[in-house]
Image (cartoon, rainbow, N blue to C red; front, side):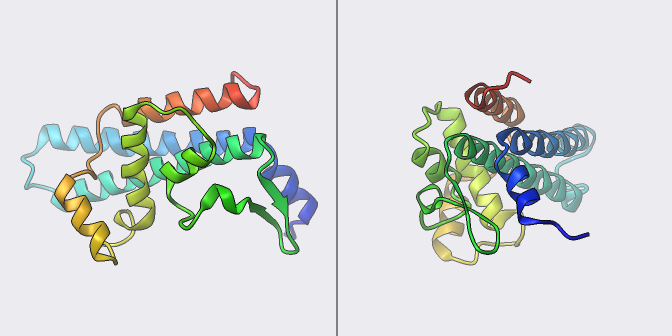
Length: 177
């Protein structure tokens, strides 16, 4: 199936398609989190270690990808998307130096965030950069900082925080659905 630039642009410039994608990722993250918390309740932490790591990493990675979609929905609604020769690109100001730095993206959008939201964006950024894909960071600074802070844990309220951010984005993008 060939996708035309016009079709790509139509989907990419609709903030609601970004928000719908975010919700689908949140739903998958929620299922993994439920499985993780039920596994933790049934077993000693040392039992099923690899399963628990996979569930936590999968949930946080999906949560981070969903949050990135929420931020991009806001960017789309503000016109920070442009057509290029090969497709669609977000403004360089949105990404800065790191395309997956969710805190920097939120700051570039001038979003007013609560401390729990900033914490979630920081942890999710680490999963998008490395923790969801590799056994360790590929740069010493990131791995050491994460280990020092023990900041990469999935928290029981993470999904509620993410959904709250998505709800505010829906309001900004003109839809309460």
